[in-house]
Length: 209
Image 1: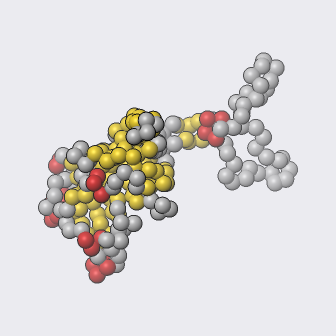
Image 2: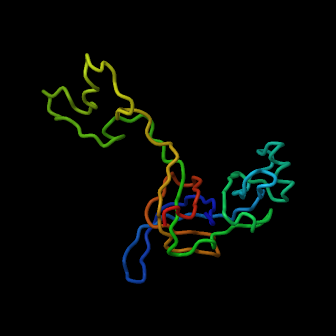
Image 3: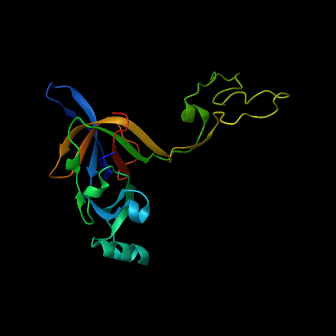
């Protein structure tokens, strides 16, 4: 991996390409991120770049993190993440990473925390089918039989049942970058990206491109 950046999900819209074909896109406010630390094999045992994103008020930053940011000579940041980049040695502390590292046509992987939907039934959570909705039916939105009684006398692990839906770390691979606005640090990605609006999204160079 050579390219990665942190972004905020703005929302979805649609654009027309040169052929007049409508394309649904997700708008991402990508960076600018600032390098807060460069990890080396000599000091840390591996090469990586630590970046900070989105300014944070001083009174909300812990004493330890204040010292970390002051040492790097950067403003206090809300998010701090680490990327294992092949070209980590090319970066220096306080360098800025902007949206221009990506270009139209690039393939990316987008990672974010999906929308939390609370406790949901098997129909909404797993797409199972419901039973008849007539008055005589005793089976409407129930998940169905959970298993045999005498053998194996238990419910197998992994059975699709009602439970907590959403609120998990999701990665969607091989998304296409449609357009990059370098001046405003905005990246338009074809299709949907996990998470609600204003959520943090990690954009990395696709591992399967």
